[in-house]
Image 1: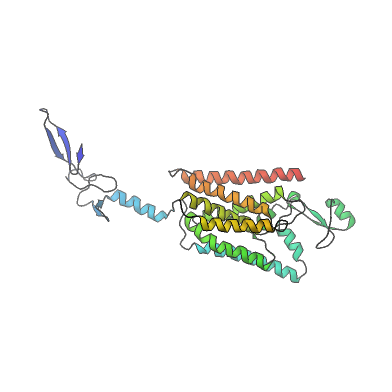
Image 2 (image 1 turned 135 degrees about the horizontal axis):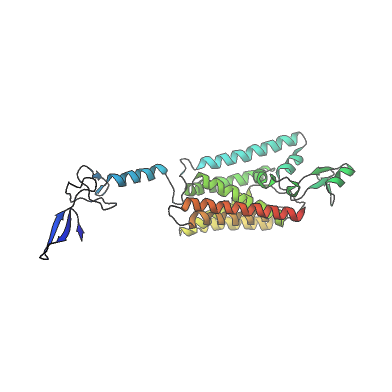
Length: 321
């Protein structure tokens, strides 16, 4: 049995006595005060006032260290300005869009879009809008056509660059507006690094889904795969927090309706893949146990997901080769 400042001991005749307890840092100083965090006895020199009671120097140091780390509930470092990353991504999209518009003035816009967009397998172009179906690279050269490589022909960068490629002003405006509403909210929960990883990796999952499920000669581009990833991640986190998700579900439902209505012109493959990727990433951030190995486990899991994306990319390329 232990009480503040004293320890109960038994004498030879069975009578209990209370002996003074010394400070954990100064054992020769008896005290009746204990640290409100760890319960260790502390003397007047060691006690540090807290909102309630007193704390020992060791607990204060640990708390200060944790505060300096500024970690969020899911392990990420909190962003001082959660809108900054969203603004940066919007600027990147705008710069790429601007380059494509300048290419239009030089009458090479379609070539630039083909270079940056996602084309599963290369095509032999007769003009900007017409191509020779069924011709390979050698056959295309034989008839004097222009060969446009796809991912299966080595244009692997398209899996990534297509995420930031837009042509129509309405397309980029709607995507950036959606990002403006979703991005800061999710970054405030995950931290900057985890937010960026979620945006990019969910977009890659969307691109991989396009690579597998769309027509091999179809050209697709846009950031909607990443945006569906943000919606999926935010929905999963809010659901785990038992928060009201009705507004987000309505927004997601509206986008699904738009995808269905625009079937044939809107890449449902990117939307589906991005949504699944976002939910998986949110599961990694949220469901990993909160212990000393959490951060390492989270990044190992993300690394595993990236490896799966790479394996899927190689497998599909071998099928199309």
